[in-house]
Image 1 (cartoon, rainbow, N blue to C red):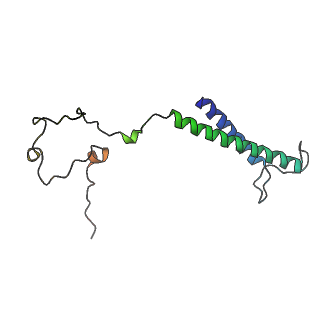
Image 2: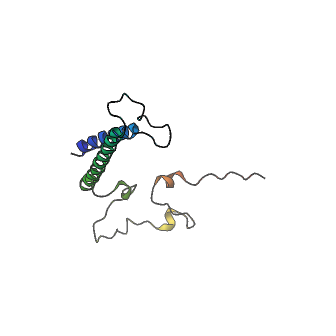
Image 3: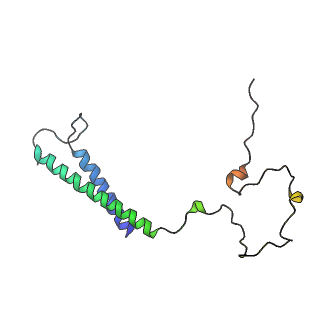
Length: 136
């Protein structure tokens, strides 16, 4: 359903762009339409038809935009990729405390003045930027 509505939405958008480009420009020579005689409709008839067509296509574009938004909110999976941690930690059962053998003493694994490791993201793996000497 969403794909069908998206295709209709894109066709309406293309038609709307075409109809807007056909309208006569009032400020300069940017418009395509509005030339001399010889057209199938001339004068006010063309302007009235193009104005009504533009209004109809704009209303249809708005309606399909709302429809796509409603479909996206109802079919969206819960959560976000950004909400998930970068490195998954093994989960412990609720109420279970880690055993004494699971814990390592802090002084045995790293020095006391060491910086915290972070959360394991890509910026933590890259490390600090190299410091170039300042020019004198």
